[in-house]
View 1 (cartoon, rainbow, N blue to C red):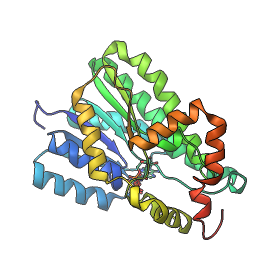
View 2 (cartoon, rainbow, N blue to C red; view 1 turned 90 degrees about the vertical axis):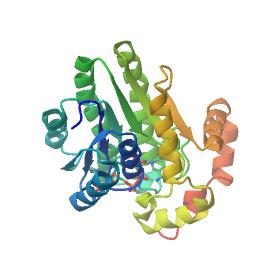
View 3 (tube, rainbow, N blue to C red; view 1 turned 60 degrees about the vertical axis):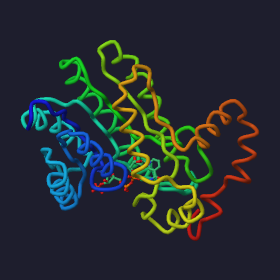
Length: 273
Ligand SMILES: NC(=O)c1ccc[n+]([C@@H]2O[C@H](COP(=O)([O-])OP(=O)(O)OC[C@H]3O[C@@H](n4cnc5c(N)ncnc54)[C@H](OP(=O)(O)O)[C@@H]3O)[C@@H](O)[C@H]2O)c1
């Protein structure tokens, strides 16, 4: 590793937003720790990044729901690179169906990946960054964490919890010079919607205004590079950010719209909802 290069840890690096962000970071000369379960994908990404950008990469294949795996991340990164400048957490997934149709195991499983893993890894990396006196912690939540619609109950709850957690962590770490930023995207073109027939059908209805993953990650990168002390969130697209704000000011009107105009996940359902 070059002493002048920063080090970024990226979860969810085997696909979608995490993968595109890893490429952005490599293009900005970060050495990278790539995390997800699919080792073959991570190895292929590492090879591509090495070839194109010449930065150092370290593949750490594992499941973020395993606490022993999470606890191994900081020591392994430290022994390989000596420090962690940026933690970008994109590992996550969504299942969309009515709240009454979830088993308890499904609820726990989604919280384990989308919420608990983020909280625990953020905590362990924050301790390291406090020693360093600097760092950036990024959590990918979702516009669904601010604007829950029919069939998004559990997913929205996992993301709202991330936003609330970050709101406190940001306050606690800011005096130490550590930034905490939450990314809340609307629909993005990734494998996220390939999970089941319901998600695929839903994606077809919103495909026209889904975000391009490279456009989104370029925007995130620009925000990270600006090191703006008071940056709290990256929200995209603007229309969803505005709707989320209106939702909190006019919740009753918002409910009427969600029951009719924005009931897309249910209307698109071919199977279960
Ligand atoms: N796409 C959207 O429309 C959208 C919108 C708003 C927010 N988001 C959020 O953005 C994040 C990234 O989603 P994406 O769109 O990039 O989806 P994606 O292409 O399906 O990527 C999800 C990533 O999470 C990893 N992952 C899932 N479970 C994991 C586990 N237990 N342990 C380790 N890694 C795990 C996957 O890797 P492996 O399968 O190899 O483990 C994959 O790299 C998610 O948190 C999602 O909720 C997505």
